[in-house]
Image 1 (tube, helix red, strand yellow):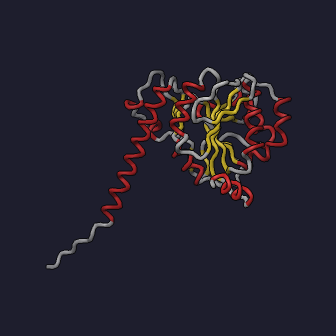
Image 2: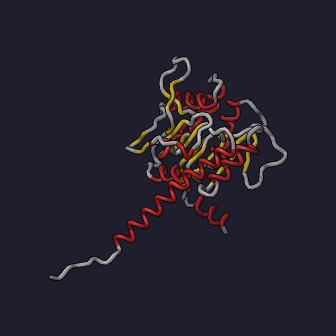
Image 3: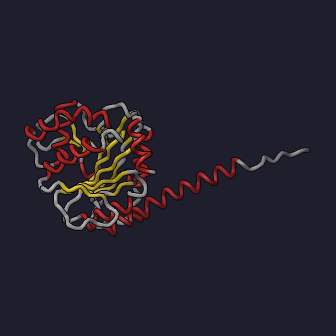
Length: 264
């Protein structure tokens, strides 16, 4: 029934809001990759893991696409092409993130709910290109980034040009140059009052002891060193969201209390 319903919705031009693509590797898919899956898959409609290696055994409960080549730029190119071939007509927004980042999935989902699907938007943590020779800013891959469907559709016919013409050692820089060169869209961290909050985690940091306000409101946290730290982050942010829910319930209960009037 689910598959038929999804097929009908595609026929009618109805799309889901958010697709999540996680960039992983043969060295991390069974550790950080599994941890990412366990912390976000229940909160997002579709989570697909992309890797260069062909693993004989895929971790349970994960949908993995293997490109068969470990070259980082090739993997980025193949990932974008795969998404354009298989998912572009099903989703409005595309979120890409490395497996060494923690994603507060509900906050990412809430952000895209307030973004206009018709805008060509490239949103994340803006960085200047290494060497400073290229104008514009790309989205740093460590903190993840959002691409609108309209932006990816515009980029589609230029993807082969980017693969052949753009030289870079970093996949996030390569994609940024591709987007800027052919669509003139720079990475932004803010759009119409909505912000892409992120936080850089210090080495051996304990989430329960972090007091920085930027940390508390982050959508993504990077770098995450191991699965244990990923789970600690998930517990921390889950408790924050749970407390918000309790506060909202308390407010509703107060608002529904009968008003007491004094008759003198």
